[in-house]
Every structure is written in structure tokens, then in C-alpha cells.
Length: 252
Ligand code: PGA
Image (cartoon, rainbow, N blue to C red; front, side):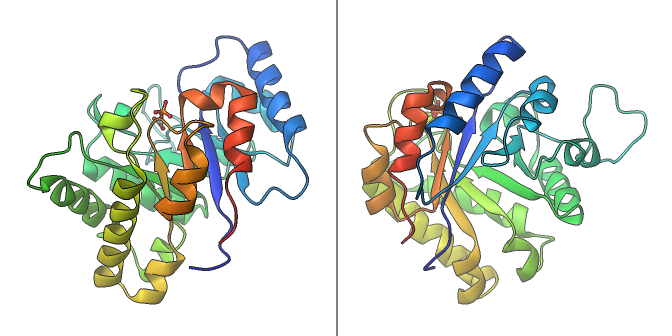
């Protein structure tokens, strides 16, 4: 597990409204990056802003918020991996709960992961339970999602994937999971990956946390939670807050 570079991804979702605002936010993040930061910094804007932002910085890596699993053809409204690669996009968020809520299935998530890996892009696959129950059924829910992602993947392929544990009840609610919840889930995911593959492979997969990460709770979540970084929604829309979160992440 040691020495893996943590990753902090800002998921802008359906924000901001104009390309001018997107550039301002992006440049504020780029300019605020201090020397010696220990995280890979990734920003995931809406599709239309990607071309402009791709010209602004190599220090901040670009991600897309979704992708389609076919490369071309009669698929109105879709965007292919090759189109994104053309603008230097190397990370793609897949299976975010907000997309699953619109009907995206485990099967579609699996196909998207496969096509991205074929293109040597990095899928950031979101998994997480909708609610916490006292019996611990949420572990079964997360297990089912993770098994589905891993189904068609070799050990080498799964090592290229970033797993984002995002409990749905913590997203955008201001109510983050506790550091103990995060640590417990990190151990659960590692042990499941060890069962499905082996210890070395499980140790290579980057596992990050998302769900109401803020400047105030990031350091604790990172240090105690044991994850390799964060997927940040709301707080990534304020450069100052996002930079504080980036600053709280260190290589272990
Ligand atoms: P949040 O969103 O930080 O606003 O809770 C996280 C996410 O949806 O990726």
C-alpha cells in the first residue's frame, strides 16, 4: 500500500454555467497548487468545458463525468472514449450514484470500465450503499457492486481502476461518513479484492472516499480513514476549499 500517490478529484457535476466561470475556477485551482503537494489533482468538468480547460494546464489532470461504451455509431447524445482522449482526458468517473439514479445499470458500468481500460484510460468507479441499516446489509450492497465491476477484469486490469466509495446518503448532504465508517469500508473493500484476486493486487488498487468531504474534515478522513484520496463534489466548486482538501492529503 505504501507510496501510492493519492488522488483528489473535483467532480463539478452540472456546474458552473459558463465556460468563462469554468476557466476562472480551473485557473484558481492551478495557481493555488503549492509546491510539494502530495496528491494527483484531477478536475472533472461538464463535457462542453473540456476543450478550453485542456489548453490551460498540465498540472491539473482532466476527467470526464461519464462516457459511452461504444466507440462510434448511432448513439444520439453519447460521447466516446476516443473523443475524450483527443482532449487529453485520462480519467473518467463511471457509475456515479446520480447516474445510477437515472437508470445506469451494473452491466453498463461494467461495459464502460472495459472500454476505458482498452483505451488505457483510468475508470473511477463509484460504489456505495443508499442507506445504512443496523444489520450491516450495506456491506452486501457494496460487495455486489464491486463484484460486478471486477467480474470481467484480470488482476492487472483491476490495478488500473480507482474505486470511489461514495455512500449515497453522504453525497451533498453535509453529513459525511465518520472516519470509523470510512476505515471499516476501506478494510472491507481491500479484503474483498484480496478474495477476488490476491493481496498484492488489492494493495495496488486506489480506493478513495466521496460524500460531503470538506476542508474541515478532509485531514481526519484521510489520516484515519486510510483511503488514497477523495472524490469531492460541492467543495470542489470553491478553489480555496478544494485546495485545502488537496493540502490535507499526504503520501503514506
Ligand atoms: P459531495 O459530492 O462532495 O457534494 O457530497 C461527492 C460526489 O458526488 O462525488
